[in-house]
Length: 553
Image (cartoon, rainbow, N blue to C red; front, side, top):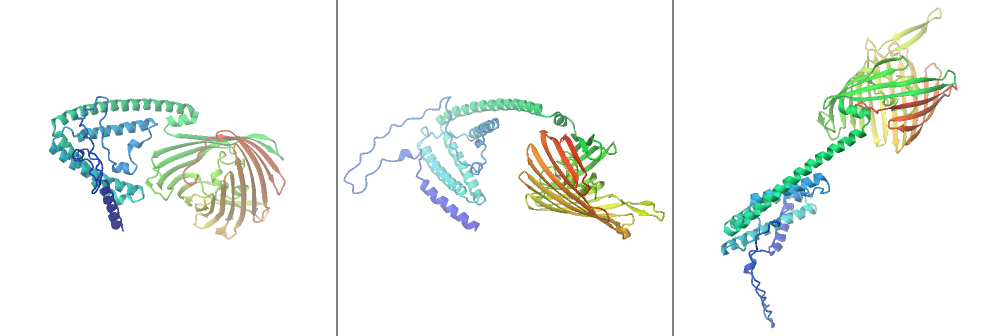
């Protein structure tokens, strides 16, 4: 099919070229005679008076010789640097540099002016033949370019275009040789070359001045940008590591206890690219309950495959695939993405999480995969144990520890629609005898439409499987957030119903307002729907929004 299409296009080009051969020929015109009367005409038209031949004079210093310009392959397909935006410094520099290149080509070509008055009769005959050939080549070339403009695949005619351009260049070279045979043309050409050399020198000077001024302007712009940076951003631009920090301070109003001030979270995060696709991260956190400072996270993230250059290999289908080693928030469910107070819009977390894995942070390894409609993470970590309480014969309570030696798990997420994500999580805990000691499973969903976000999670936990005396816990929560910046409102319902223990239900209502970038004042009112107890919180949370790599997005 491509051969037939090429044949049709070439035939169209030939027909179009044939109609264009009667174009103006400055060398052949001197041989043409006046119009002849039609046969049988009774009236004879007078012959026009012969025009006086005027020998063209060499161009003055202020004139620029006319150059016959063909449409080359780069211009035919929209890659002409002369078409750059002339309103910017880069556009002017590109335009001037393109003109410089054209002028140098003219000098190299050395056959520019179409002045045949100084040629001999034989030279004019040869120039006429060459001009006719050149006009035909131009016509063929233009026909192919127009066919491309109308939708023809450029790959089908690229070789023909390049062949025609080569033939046009060879024809111009032949014409240059004919011109150089004339002494008078040599003098005119020498004058033209001097003009072009002066123009080149002027353009080179102007390009150098533009680049120098542009460098100065960019320096001023960089200084203005530096002045607009926050102190922490300015520090990050100077140090070899990036620093992030966040924290919150709150006032707690309790129904059955004293009111007091408290520090919720305080964390300092450091991150550094060891190489392009390997990043090391550390988080130093303050534990308000233990009133101590410890390591909240320490990870080494190797990005193996992804869409940008921060990965070892690039892929158009995979956004990111990598491996993380170290200590991290275990990606079970979706609540782990809001452990940081700067990310959670309510002051407290859901009781469904507190009653099951309790904000699981552990040591181990994980592999993550992120795609536009699918994501997955697999992990192996130390895991956590559990306790059981039994009564002896005397009625005393005995507490037994059940440690875990390994936990393995995964979470899979799919996005059937762009704003909706549905996921499922599973984690299995093994004891020292490689027996399954406990199990965590859950499903989650999140929907974001405009300024409204709704999400929820169900968690199932069972313990004691290795002793055939398992105890199960069911937990769920749902939260809705409407953010009409700078104000937001939110509500959450949580429920826990463990085996052989009373149920617990909690309703939390909150709102907040952004008082500065990454800084909010929040209010939360939580009530236990079973016991009736309630607590209120007023919180100030702020800091830099830090998102670790992997599934924290």
